[in-house]
Image (tube, rainbow, N blue to C red; front, side, top):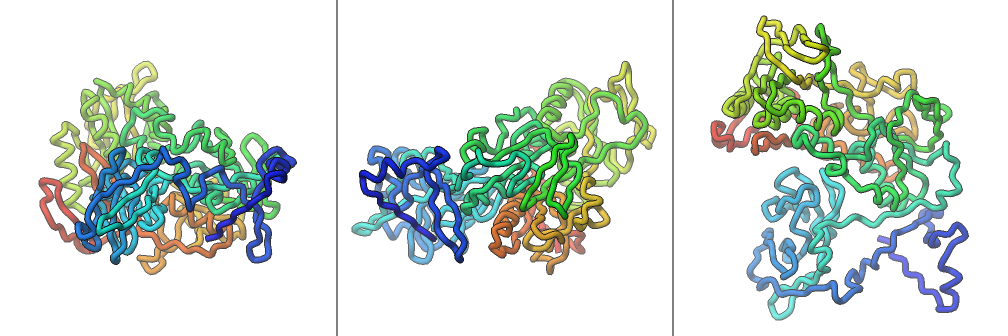
Length: 539
């Protein structure tokens, strides 16, 4: 940790206040002989976060003997709650809610100085509150704990107790006005979780040069898993960060901008409209492109791949009290079916396999999930596929299956998998495998120096599978890829060792999956599959 305190005599202070470019002077200090510019936000100094006495609350929360080692307790300070933790004889206090979706951390798991969220597996350091595994962007606030006469007291800021989240201190960009529009230090192609976490991590680590993100989307980065889990969410409701955030930390986002080619020799990205941008470091985080149907009539109206909030909103509108056909019992297909089941007149699901999720969860778990769907009025047409989409006046009317069955349909959602969005890299010299995935090492580096890749479009060595190259298209993993890429752009030499994690939610039930099982010999089930209260071990 580097702490810097600058004390300036009164009369010098007014002169020092502004730098020539009209911004507060950045702090400059030397690391390994190279000057690094830091431009930190005006935060209260960390050693005394309670500079406003009116904002502070202090309360006795328990007796020292009330908590055993390894225990957590939610405690009330009158104007908000905190999570009190005892580990190795020491007390710690942090925010009690996970900043991702607000899960109660007291129901999570405490282990080796970290607490893990019970819902989606985000992980926080109990000493600092810092986020160490994802999903989510913010860390937990940390509160002071003191022991007096065998009583445990917590001293906390009222504001932190109410917000229950803490955005890490970030650098800002120095003298943006001096920049040439067509060159940037870091260019990030793609504005999903990987791209955003990369940009934020660079700023958290004190990087104060230009960062540009570009996306084909119309929107700033948003919570993509919600497109199929809560389909009527508007873009601003699911934004990962508000517009002001990007302005505050000088992270530029170019929306509706598609990169057509990358010239690695000259370090230039060429956009579809001809615009060119030079970069020093590049992150490619373009994600996936959904596969389309290849049958007759695929161009009729009201057939959707769900890519954007507008797609999701439109499907809900068209499906209400109407007939819906979903092609593909993928995570997306099944979540959409669950969401529309009580809104649509009918929901039919067409799938090539005999059981949903068979490859992923095995036949027994797949059947239990299928049963839950059937009891919620979803009809399955298994081991068949679509042969034709029929229209009336240009709009979808019927879906014809290869089995000969004809389904009435006002709207069709296609969820038959996806391919990596890497076509634009074909001639670039960046190493891509036979399936189109970008090949990276444990530091998220490609074969080209200064070019990194992250998220759904990559294969990387997975530590828990003896460094086998795998593709893990999960939301949590994309966050971690972005963080590792940023740290290695700054030459930290950080390798990825995360355990993959995903969740899916349907009819108020959630399935959570940890690890990476490409095929398995046996499934050991504990608990009750019929009640959907079980743990399955894939061996």
